[in-house]
Amino acid sequence: MYRMIHLESLIPETLPGVSLYVRHGEKYVMYKGSSHSFTCSDKKRLLDSNVKTLYVKSHQISKYNQYVESNLSILMNDEEMEPLERQHVLYQTSVNYVHEIFDRPAVAVKESFDRCRHLMQHILNDVLNADGVMTALCGLVDHNTYTYVHSVHVATYSISLHTRLFELERDELLDVGIGSLFHDYGKVYTPKQLLEKPGKLTASEFLELKQHPSDGYQALKDLEIFSPVSLGIVKHHHEKENGCGYPDGLTSFEIARSSKITAIADVFSALTTNRSYRAAMTKEEALEIMFGEMAGSFDLEYLEVFKKTIS
Ligand SMILES: [Fe+2]
Ligand SMILES: [Fe+2]
Image 1 (cartoon, rainbow, N blue to C red):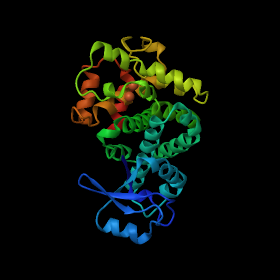
Image 2 (image 1 turned 30 degrees about the vertical axis):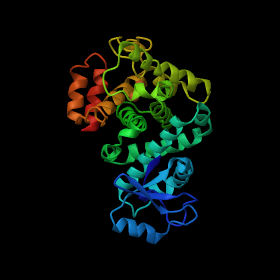
Image 3 (image 1 turned 90 degrees about the vertical axis):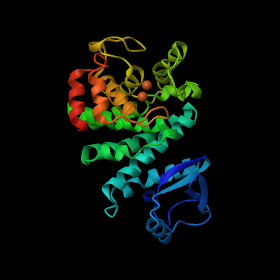
């Protein structure tokens, strides 16, 4: 298995022992073995051939991820890089992090929690300071990594909407971002074939899927590192204003504002992302459904502000 990485995430002469591959059609060809350093001329050659994406084998991805994360401050302040390129590096790094978390047992979450906070600080900076966050997020389209891409979308949209609606302290925003990034963590306990099923789920399959908020909440709560705000988001992102959501069937005034916001971000991300069984909707189409067919699900006031946030 190969994982996509962004060429701009590599600082020449610094990459530690990771082999790099390029893709030719369906084939992956080694570009640089792990014992060779990645040089300035390598980077120039690739850029000259318009290659902006490289691949790393999945057993080396954690090493690569930690390398990029430790260089993020440098990369995010690199004036020579286009702002959009910088954002792509940040969001792709976040997707890779979530992928790593979903691939490993719960204890990995605990071990890597500092990495999570660190990444979220960068996402926060980006949301608070940069334009074009939405454009950067749209670049993250990959069927095979849907859950990870979706998690990063939801974290970013949630932080944006919170910022618009309330004057939150940075720490609170961080908790919102972390909770949203992990909102679907419970899906690690959902059978893969069910998550990837192209058609409609049967009633019993749907019941099984509906376990993910409670499962995620319980697993993350047991780690004793997540704040109540983050945990609340994990547990209640499928609650609806009209009381028809799950797991607790809460109604409007019983649902925390952070969960209401994540619910909006969650559905919007799901509708506007490509899936194996349907193409992504435009943001206008998604909003039409959220205001129309799905009326009663969301806090209308928040949804109105969200509409302005993304347009
Ligand atoms: Fe969910
Ligand atoms: Fe979700």
